[in-house]
Image (cartoon, rainbow, N blue to C red):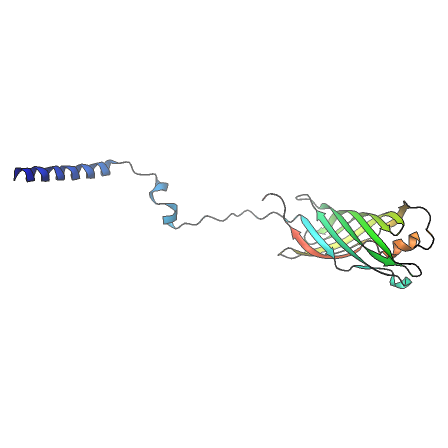
Length: 213
């Protein structure tokens, strides 16, 4: 009987000590009392706006060449890329392409072209705005390698989803030719330049955001 009482006393004493230790233990910090998942809270979304679009890729959908008034015919494929420094109204663009043209009275000739452009957005902004600037144009048509320079004007509209449509007109005037005299039986220099309708661009593509957010 004494052994049972002694055992019971020890059990009660141990229980009392355990309760006392639990009561005197330091409480966790307030932020640690309830785990984040148990509180059911959601992270607060960032209110920082996304960066502005600063890069545009376009394909010329009006790939015509040849002056219909002179009876010329042709086709061309062109693509353009434009980049703008962050927060600026100035940008630079490059248009490259190729095709063929047949001037009346001469055989068909292959053509390659490269244009560099400087743009300033006079009205609106980079996504929806009217721009003016200048163009420097290089073309290889048949035996002729030519360059021209002139003014540029155009407009671009970009949807909220980033689909871009642009129309621009460059008017480069033939400045120089790096080829010799007109080759016999080949398209003359100035006829070749006019036949490619330099500077007419109707493009569709996309506007992108690049760089860090």
